Amino acid sequence: MLKIIKNKLEQGYRTSKYPKTPITLNKRYRGVPQIKKNCSAALISKCADVCPQDAIDVEHGLIDLGRCVFCGQCETLSKGDFVTFTQNFELAAAKREHLLTDGNLPRLADNAKAHFKKLFGRSLQLRQVSAAGCNACEADTNVLNTPFFDLSRFGIQFVASPRHADGIHVTGPISINMRAALLTTYEAVPAPKVVIASGSCAISGGPFRGSPEVVGDLEKLLPVDLFIPGCPPHPLTTLHALLNYFK
Image (tube, rainbow, N blue to C red; front, top):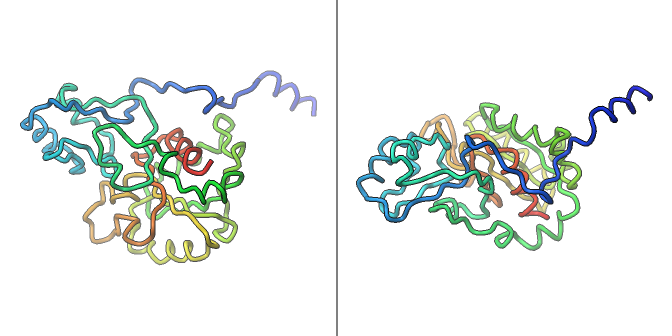
């Protein structure tokens, strides 16, 4: 016991004060993109040509955050004349179409479903489903359980059984082999339930989009309530999404 007390005194308080206190991420982090509306169509086309995810809508000069893996090639090629990526990690959306953006994302809280806030505002239990993910999204989700983020202080927890859950948090491009397992897990969650698509793979297929071995779009299988883009989504992106959509 004395060793525990001594360790506590030495370590101090390590948990982040977010969301009460804002957090500034490293300048290398790529968050919400800001598109320059006066950019030439020719430069936008060049950026679209190098985009590995076909995430740039040339006609409207927009970026699809559901496909984007935030590689930054469009920013590098255009030298910021088409797009610059900010440090804003508030990327989540309640509707898929909101992710096609010029950088002005609707406030997530304004699009949250009121009955979800009423049902899950005090306690939200989620079952994580890795549907053939590369483990990047899964790893950054697990970070939320560390002392720095301490997800459980908000009444949010990841549970082992879907029967104990209020919804599923899906990562990965959903391989054909994982399709049945995913649907079985969803069916085991008692209603009413929520579905969260986390990462570009779950939202659009990510780098695996178009492969015959993956479903590549969670919405093809289940009604999705919350979209969290990124490759992988930063832990703060996920935390912001959960707090603003359900709390």
